[in-house]
Image: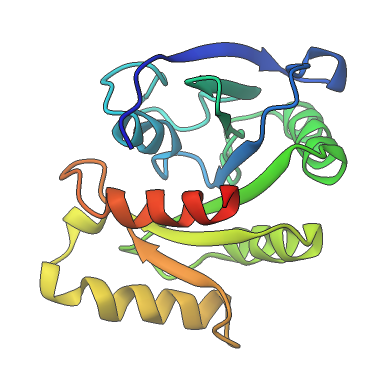
Length: 194
């Protein structure tokens, strides 16, 4: 997909701040520093629309990116970041949960995990959360450029088995660094809009 005019629209922490135009929303979840912002930049072929940081825990709001007035990528705060105070963690958890369980515009959840590591307890908790939302989702094993290309498919399958033993979830590799596997992800997004 060629994206012509993507724009950052709003950071929100409550329902009254969400966009009101009823465009479909593709939601990104994953632990801090897993590469959600880099994923957005790669998918839309822009360098800095979504702000990236080497410091985990930078995203503390729901960030809505308008993709050519067709849909939104919604970047959720990462989990598992210990420098956030308990109070902040509770606040972030509360508005994230409220969004995931009440927002009717969500059409797909993209759950990003790091291909180099076995899913953590936090990843498994988030996976259960995603399942309980009853929304369509895919698992993306990000940072595929960090392991040998010959190991990518097997590692992706292992992660899927860890998170989704019944094997009914789509699991794809992804690399923002090498800009590979982008078309596979667009195909899954298109399916939702068909």
